[in-house]
Amino acid sequence: MTGLENSHMQEEENYYQILSVPSTATLIEIRNAFEEKLEEAHLEAIAAYSLLPEVETEEKLLQYSQAFVALANPIARAKYDDEIKQLEIASKQPANQLDSASTTIAPYPGDPEREKTEAALLRIKPVKKQHEEKLEITKSAPKEVVGQTQEERQDFYLNLAVKNELSEDSLEEYYSKLRAHGGKVTFNGAVLKQIRELKSITLDELAKITCIRSTYLEAIEDEIFHKFPSEIYLKGYLICYVEAMNLSVEQIYEDYICLYKNYLEAKNG
Image (cartoon, rainbow, N blue to C red; front, side, top):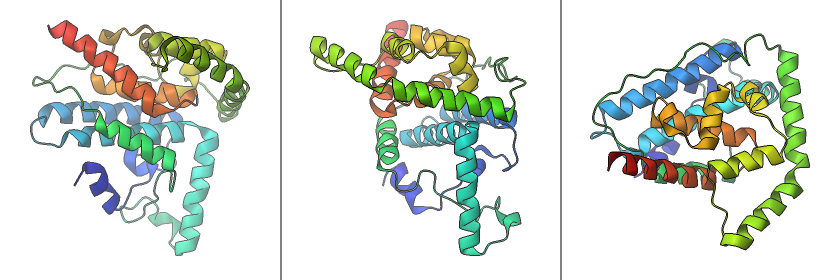
C-alpha cells in the first residue's frame, strides 16, 4: 500500500491543521508556518532517510505547498473558510471545535486534476542525504509582503487572474512553437521565464503573490540550484511559482526536478 493510498484511508486535515496555524492566522504567520514545515520536512527526510517510505516526504511537501497556496490567496481562503462553515452547519458541530483533530475537510475534494498531480509528485523520489545540513533560510517575511493590506492582496490576485486568462491563447501558441521544434514541451528555467514574461508578470508581482523572495524565484528561472537551502525548499517554492502562474504542476515539476537531479549527479561526480 502506498503512502498516498494510506493517507486517503485516514481522515484528512484541513489546510489550517496541515500548517499548524489557527483559522485566524495572518498572512505572515501562514508564510512563516510554511517555511517551518519545509524545514521540518527537510530534517525528517535526512534523519529517517532509511526508515520512511520515500513517498512520505513528497506527500507532506505537496500538502504543505497546497495549503500555503490556498491560504495565501485571500479570495481562495475566504471561499475555503465558507466551505468549512457550511460543513459545520451541515454536521451541526460547534464552531469552537473547528480546529480540533476530529474536524476535517478534504483539500480540493473530488478534484481529479489535484489527485493526478499528487500521484505524479509521489512518483518522483527525493534525493537522499545522509548528513544533516545547516539551513540558512531567512525567517522574516520578504519585503514585498510586509505591509500588504487585505485589499491590496486581493487586487494582486485579481490582476494576476486577468493576466493568466488573457495570456491563454498566446501561451498555447508558444507551446505549439516548442512542439514544432522538439515534438514535446520540456519545462526548464528558461521556458518558465519566457512563460512568465509572456503573461506580463514581473518577478516583483510573483514575489508579492507567493510570499517568496524574488531572489529564489529568479534562481528557479536561472536554475541556480545552490541558492536553495535544500531540495525540499526548491520543490516547495517551485510548486508555489507554478501554481501562481496557473500552470499544470505535474509535468513542470517532473521536468524541472529531473534537471535538479542531473545537476546533483554532475556536482557529485
